[in-house]
Amino acid sequence: MHITTAVAALCIGVLPKAAHATASGTCCSALAATTLKSQVVYPGSAAYKISLGSYWAENVQLEPTCILQPRTAQEVSLAVSTLVAADGGACKFAVRGGGHTTWAGASNIVDGVTIDLSLMNSTTYNEKAGTASILPGSRWGGVYETLAKYNVTVAGGRSGVVGVAGFLLGGGNTFHTSRVGFGCDNVVNYEVVLADGTIIEVNKDSHADLFKALKGASGNFGIVTKYDMKIIEGDKLWGGIVTYDNSTTLKHLEAGHKFINNIEKDPYASWIGMWEYLSVTDQNMVANALEYTTPVAYPAAFDSFTTIANTSSSMRVANLWNLTQELGQASGYRDIFVTGTFVNNLDVMKRTVDIHNRMIEEAKAGAKGDDYTMFTMIQPWPKLFTDHSVERGGNMLGLDRFDENLFQVLIDYSWKDEADDALFNQLANGALEELTTYSKSIGADNEFIYLNYANETQDPLSSYGPENVKYIQAVAKKYDQTGVFQTQVPGGFKISAVGK
Image (cartoon, rainbow, N blue to C red; front, side):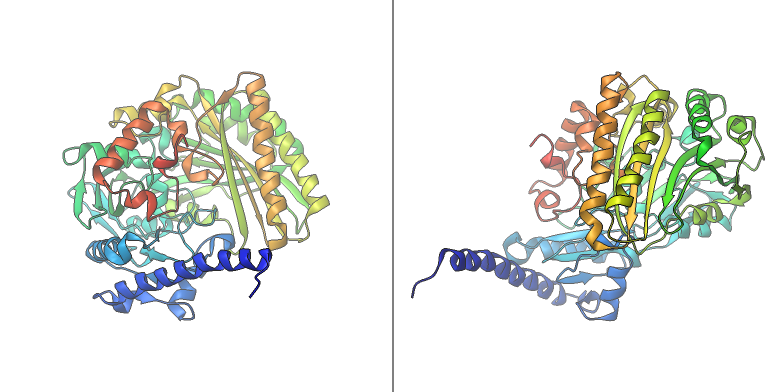
């Protein structure tokens, strides 16, 4: 029988995939042979569909061979040890917390097992200890709602739909960062399942090297099954969203530039500047998320913003749960995040918005769908943030090596039509590349990449600096000697990939 080159190539391409699918089935069977059997769900089942549908962005809703939904750390331990032992270590698996990451494969997998932690979603207030114990499948809205009953809160996400686990493992910028540091700086203890199934408590007195490494270095060491965080007394804030006509842009940029350089004078104040285009209304607007982390209206820290004439305002005294519901974006869209960090330079801010406006015109000319949103956000990253991190023992972000006040840009595009995937990915990456090139040309660039906003094409771990990269590599090797979380768990940003 004569086989053409094309047919041979086709056959060669099919065989590995079929073999891998068989291996994935073996992995699911191994889990089903344990006491976890009832928590293994398969394609076609209601639980499987609900799990996939609960990912925030539609483009990340991959279909694993099966999904495991543990309820306790002990069940996570059994799952990990089973998957590591099964099929000669060939089982690939993903770990999913809140499911808010916007790139496919970060917290899900094809031809493998997804360990879905979403059923582990409770929060417990420990009044005597002054902490809250938060399970990894929680989202911040649920955390704040629970803690509001006690008039306390924690330094967590600014949108209620964001997951706890990924947020804290990537650092975590919060409304309270200028007062208490990043979210990760406020974790006092982690419960961690290691690659061999061992469950350990990790804090400044026990496994202190891993305790520091977990503060920003993501899922390179094990699966965190509980976060104990310091409580912040008082749950009430003054805040909301204020919208403006796009013609006021320069006033906002000047106000934002000034705000970043003066934030240490009033660390209760938080600002997010948002430039947003909505295709369904053909509306290009400016919006400010202004939050003051104590219930005082119109503090002087916001004077430069509040004197600008607005088109709407939701400013009020409310609790953190209420305010973070307002900042949640709609689910059910395809999405991309890309991010960069820059010296607090007004010209870079201006160029950021100029590029944003130009990308809107390119989208109008090229988009096949008619339902999309284009956000460009400017957020302060002043040196004050890092000072608090150092006070609390340090983290992995490496920001302490910079002396300047910085700001961060998040480019966030979402769209309905899958046919527009290539367009919006191209526009987002192109916008960031152009902005980065410009910032370098005037000496206002910065290498830091915030992991929680990074796209798969970016390398946030390398931006932590060579000293921290070496530290993370050493700790990962110590606690995961066979590299399970580097190879068997392919999703997320891997320390083993840095420099390659």
